[in-house]
Length: 249
Image (cartoon, rainbow, N blue to C red):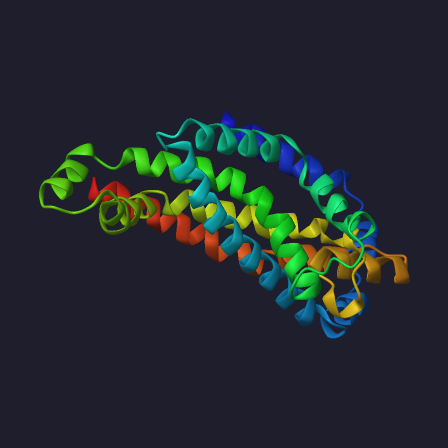
């Protein structure tokens, strides 16, 4: 019955759709060639650079926040909790808007690496709030017996954290970290609010700009599919990691 219902839905959708209109609006061949040849590669590389830099910044800051959350020092825990709850509750778009207005609030302020640095910091601040909770869960998942064994061998608490706890924690949380990188990659579509020059366009801004110029959505569709070159290999890697961890257990 479930297969029959699915088949009926697919056939109905195929019969009701205006395929000529769909091809004209979303998949016009001439505009597909135009989108592929007028800077898509540069926009793809920019998106990859924005994603990698923001994730690296968020990972470092998220690790620090996770350790603060687990600290025995009360003010550290409170500060980390306030940060995490604030940036998890505020939309990333608002964070980008705030960063676009920073030069007005602080005349002469320049973030290193220009647009790239601004994106890394703005998006990394948001990503760090989510990564902090993931990393904290990974640290707490490390068996306490291993920590006690390390301390009994004469290792300091700092060395135990670096040599024993964090390596195992990151191995445990590698799949969700990969998922977070996928989310960061998609969040780079919000970079347009910074007012980019053409050479700094990411995929969504590139596709939308070309779509507006040609009054057709085909370039935006092409840009959207290009994201899959980043997200699909990562999603496949997540499934492989989860399967390997399941076999290890």
